[in-house]
Length: 455
Image (cartoon, rainbow, N blue to C red):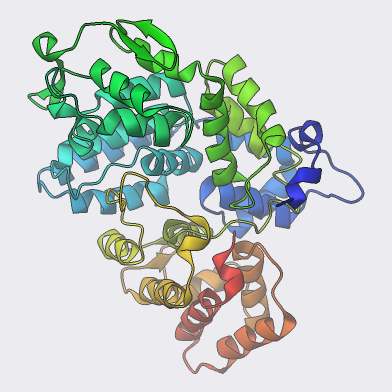
């Protein structure tokens, strides 16, 4: 079926965003950029971005800030402390802390993206250290070299356990990892044959774990020639991975996933729209950060085809709310709520990861998401700017229900809110006898609206 995207000129789509009489750089577009790239931003940060201009803001979002090194050291120390518990579920609380406090939120968003792409669950990989090491691996390459990421993830002990690669033997090749490497990680369904899977599985024989680290067992490796995707050879070391990524479909598949992550959930973009990004990814040696920068600064990203055309995931919803209002919270409770709402960090549902998009939304899901927000706002350990909600809004100079509601709408909503819905929120805020609880109920009511589910 034809879609609105078919009419888009690819050359226009990926050009740098240009100001015009029809398209101004304003709070709406700045907030859109922050929601998609950084989980959200405060009103002050959005105002500063409007003055700064889109190109400069995108550059700042993509490049690591100077304080990143110190933050990484502190977060690693905290993670190592959590490892003493031996409980992978505690890692989710640590990751929420990182998402809320990182000075480089795009890096964290992309780490989450790759966690869903190379999905590995602690449900099967019960070793917390293995799961943490994989998380660090994803973060290290989240905006870097995709080829190296695939090479490293193929040797990652958590992945070896999760897809049974650690038991892949010459006499009985296990096809699990070979199949998912082509179907879910690099090429997409329909771009390989069953024979390719069988031959590729032989390439990974003898890839094991020893003392918690990758180990190549030459005695269990099938060193005979194989034929994978039309090429015959011994495929030593990671040569077969490089060959897979030389397939033209590989770059198209990856940029298609990036498109869905950053631009819109649906409809599926036509091949002509994706091809320029695929070419650019190959020309820039598979540097993910380069393509992400191109997308975030593009005409299409700031157009009506993208703004408000993604469904918030539970993480987007909760972390975005907190980052937009300078929030901190009980990370363990939030981690449990996220898992109950279908996005347990370190616990993706299967090797496909989270389907995302419309699958996040149904009548019971919206209720669960709103209840998660109510729990989050009502938790005595949740603070906004270090204090209560009423103190926070007063500090911002939002002293009336109208001002407060308009701030929430401007910062948190990607699509317009009907006047009647706005009036209802103002009424809730105004009529509650306790001002602080009135603010909390207003945010809860906002979270029940269909508009709040979009970003």
